Image (cartoon, rainbow, N blue to C red; front, side, top):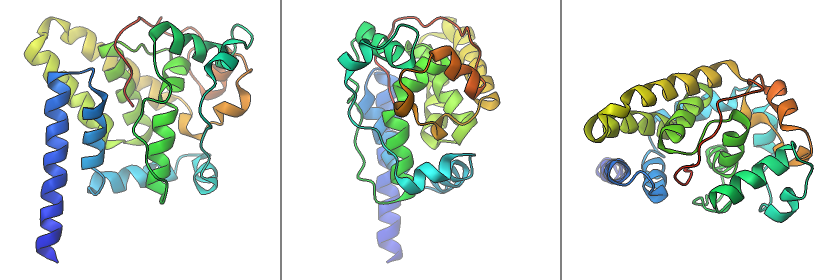
Length: 231
C-alpha cells in the first residue's frame, strides 16, 4: 500500500514538473498549466488551499450549492448595456479572440473539484473585474492576486515559474514582472473574495459598481492585448 502511494506521489510530482518545464518553454500553453494543477491534487498545499477557500466569507454557501455557471452566450452578453459587467466580459472575449470554454473540465465530486471548476470558469471575469491584463506579465499578476485571496498552489508555482522564466530569458522585463506581482497581490489582499460572487446573476450590473462592491479600484490599470488567458 505504501509503495503504491509513493508511486502515485512520484507520478504526480513528475506531472507537475513536466507542466512547469512546459510553461517555461511555452508560456501560452494552457495544457501545461492544467498539468501543474492536476499534479498537485494530492499535495498538502492543496489541503491548505481548500481550507483557506472554504473559510472565505460567502464561499461556503456557493460551495455547498455547487454553484456553477452555464456556458457563456457571448452574443447575449455583447448586447447588454455598455458599461455593464456582461458587456465588458463579451468585449474582453471578442477583442482578444478567447474561447470562453477553453479550460480543462473537472467532474465535481468534492469541494476541491468545485473550487477548481469555479475558479477556471470565472478566470476571465476576474481579469475584467480586476482590470489586470492578459499579456504574460498580466497573467502572472493575476496569479499573484489569486495567491493573495486563495493560496492556490498552482498560482504560487506559476508566479515563481514566471519569475524564473523572465530571469533566464527576458531579464530586462524583471522590473515589470515584479511590479505586476506586487500590484496583483496587493489588489487580492485588499479585495473581497471574488470566488464568493454570483457574477452570472447580475450581468447587467455596471462594472464600476461591481468593483466598488468587492473593494477594487474603479479605474484600474488599462488592460493590454496579449497572449491567451490561463486558468
